[in-house]
Image 1 (spheres, rainbow, N blue to C red):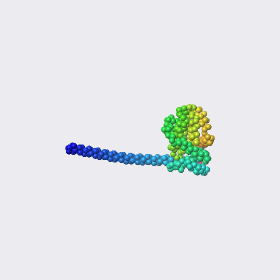
Image 2 (tube, rainbow, N blue to C red):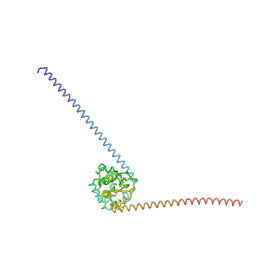
Image 3 (cartoon, rainbow, N blue to C red):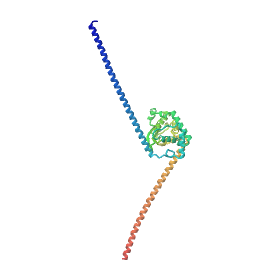
Image 4 (tube, rainbow, N blue to C red):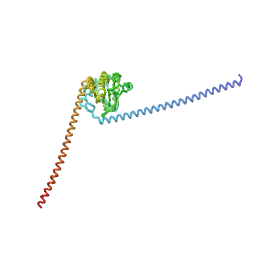
Length: 348
């Protein structure tokens, strides 16, 4: 190889080395820029996440404040009935104290500003359901906790009961004037040949659990309205209804505040007699006592209204009589004046 060729080869080699170094330099610059961009993205993402977390925290704080305000408003209107927190006699207070000790190992932990009151309200539900029988109240609580551990009602989601939910046979419809969640049961929409008893029960549990989760202290029970319009035998699921009644009575103790049946037909009376046999005697006795109390209140109300009406009539009559006497007295005074005037004229 001559000198010119050697120089040319060296020049080509140097040029290749220079190009290679240049490419490496560019590559490093690109990699650096990419790393910088990635760092910026990470920083931006972190800031976004922080902002999102802050927003979530602020939203939770707002919800907490709103919940507290709502509870305070409810407490202003709340007038506890006998056997409820705030209206207990000495015997009931003692029963509450003893039950708290008995079930201390399984007692749910409540959160929030009213956790102590909610704990006592929880225990009092079972005491009322057991007629303040300590042993029976404890059995109620332990049985429910066992059932919840096995059934896991909190895992029944809307998606898992979506097909049943779409039928709108059982749904939440706001609250009543006392703040209780209202649950509507459209009996005629249930077709026992198109669904299973288990699916029906799961829908009932989901809707009930959802309603309970939205309750604000001191509200602790629901109102259920059964619309039995167009109800027929094809809508009556004997085994499913029986199981549903058992679950509500034993695992949702004292959760029923008021129960209404509307648009009742002849078939309902027959089915009601069947359903009544599923209700335990104590619940039936309580229902009868409540019915008698309501009838007594209604009777007293009517008597009071009648008495007020009679008193009003008597007052009006006395008022008219007084006005008449006053007019007569006025006329008598005028006659007396005329008589005195006549006497005076005669004397003259």
